[in-house]
Image (cartoon, rainbow, N blue to C red):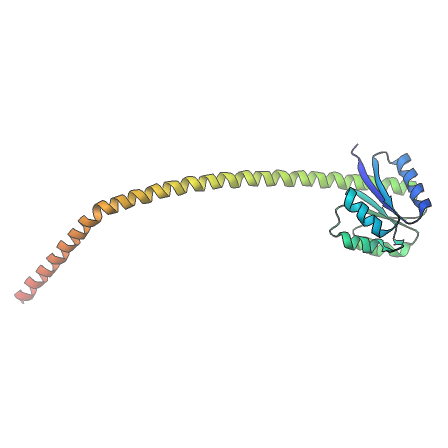
Length: 196
């Protein structure tokens, strides 16, 4: 089972302790990276620990969780809102929240939210690996094409040198033949003119 790193941001110490206990007891795949009591400390904690999942209370001193998320855009972690207020649910959806849990937290809902986070993280990791494989493949193909272009440029340079050599060799002869042809044309023209 892959671990899920978690940060909790909530200004109510009792809620934080309860959530920590529930996670410890029912979600063994969770590794707590830290807790913060307000968005200011939460911002620093998220930047420092780069969690997979953040549990966020909404109303806190010094701002709310939406202000915090706005400062962190684009968000690279999953978000589960945990609040006593259900009127923020629509706004939470707009922030692509993984889940929205009401206090007191229901254990089954918490376990399901952590499970969903694990699934999303697995999918994200799979997509990241695929993206990296495609990138590596493209880099290899570009490198091969660059080598082919270099070989073609060398061949072109050799052909140009050969052509220049041929031109240098035959241009004087061609010029001489052109002069003779022109002289011959003039002579024929003169003869024709005299014949008329």
